[in-house]
Image (cartoon, rainbow, N blue to C red):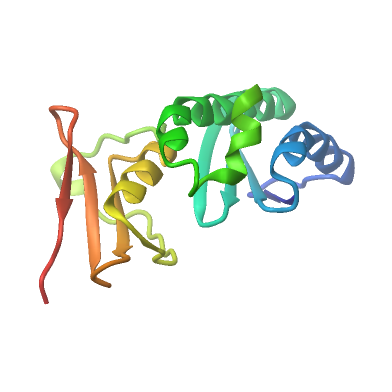
Length: 179
C-alpha cells in the first residue's frame, strides 16, 4: 500500500514515517496494493492531531485523533478506522460483490464544530474532490463511512450531481436537482 505522510507545521522524520508505515502494514495483508493511506500530522499547541485517510477503489475511510504523543494519536486513529470498517460490515456484506476487496479484512477484524457569532460567520475552508459515479445506496454507504451528514455525488444512472443526507429521524434524504 502507498503511505503518504505530511506534517503541517511540523517536520516528520524518516524514523517516524517508518514507525507509522509499520503500524499500517496490518492493512496491507488484507488490501494488498489496492489502497493508499494519507496521514496528516498537525500540531495544536501541546496536542498533535493525526488525520488518517484510506482510499480503496473509489471508497474513502477517514479517522482522526488527538494526543500529546504522535504515535499514541496514530494508534488511536488506526483503532477508529478499524472500528469504522467494522460498523459498516453488515452493509458491506449485503453488497459484497461490490466490496469484495474488504471481505478478507472483515473476517478478522469528528470534526469539532466551532461556534461563531452572527458577525463572524464566513467561509473558512474550501474543499474540492472528484465526483465519482455511484448509486444512491453506494452514496449513503460512503457518507456513513466518512462519518458525514451529507455527501455530494454523481448519479451513475442519470449523470446528475445529487446529494444524500441524513435526516433527524435517522432516515436518509436524496436531493436530485434538475437543470
